[in-house]
Image (cartoon, rainbow, N blue to C red):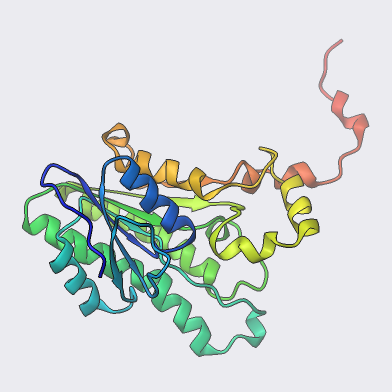
Length: 259
């Protein structure tokens, strides 16, 4: 483990899947904003410098407990760890499907519950931020269990919010869209695919890991004190723009216009 210096005055954050991609961007931004940060990941070799690191899986409940014993109870937990096993559903084997459910959905539950139990025992408020996906809002082909788990996390976020809000725990989720980071990097290595995807985003560009980190740190802050139980879609408008790509005769544009 690589341990960072601690201060009792600092707020603290735990980021799962925090050694790479979106999680690493969130961890770096948190440290820039003055947080003491811990990262849980199966491989922490490339974790941001300055954070405490724990090379465990979110499926390892005992490992999570040991990490929390060592780091302390964080003020904020960001449940970012996730995997995908691509392929047509008709060809998916049950073990691959189950693995994605275990990491994405059950791992999110276990980490959040472990932190919240300690916060409640210590009579402290806290924040839970779950990372979902646009694929939990609108399904994509050949994504196996991924979209189903992300939709499940969105509803789990709502359930956490109604059960844990009265305990002083604020819970929200972030649904990233087409983000040029993490698991999506191999997709955007193809320049033509990148161009085509960018052209479908109303904001005119792909998202970045920092776009997601901005939202995560906002939700973690007191500025978001009245935001609770939400699944905030951060996608440049793409999930709401399906109808924009459908053909439409120009002659109908004048219908209903008064001269």
